[in-house]
Image (cartoon, rainbow, N blue to C red; front, side, top):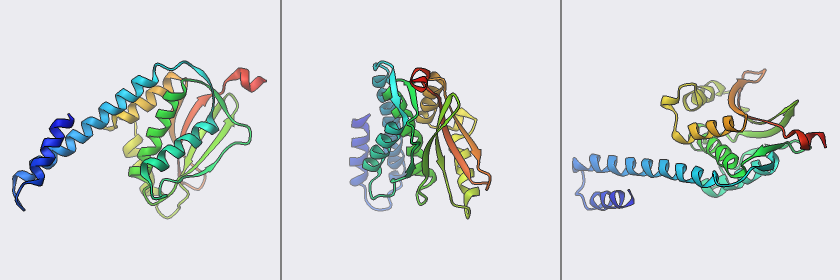
Length: 203
């Protein structure tokens, strides 16, 4: 895949200006990059599957993902506002898989949905569940953000990226879910919900 993309890039750089074949080479380059991205997601998930289950501090996981996104996206635009629960929500599962799932969800948000608006990420405990909520506190264009959220995180799997499908299946495997709802003021909120680790909660 890398070789095909490399040669397509080489041919593209040697084409004369306004050559009609440039469009086809551009398609080859972009589709090769897309396929490489899919393969990287699958390989990352496969590698994470080898890790064993353990008690996970959701607050620490959120901060780690925030740091990963800051390094990936740069320029400070990925720095989400974070407000974490004073009592860290603890869950049981595969740390690498859950990190990968939350990272992919937030990456799509930062990269495609809310490039200019920094989301507000918070953690909460609701009875037997914990939540990581991603709010978008901008009343001026919340309808536009809600439309984008439905486009990327809607019900139909046929239109979703593989990375998001894998992320959702990871959450389901851990007894959790990915959902969307609206605040009382109509602003949209995306949430990741997972069951609280009962032994830790009872301690």
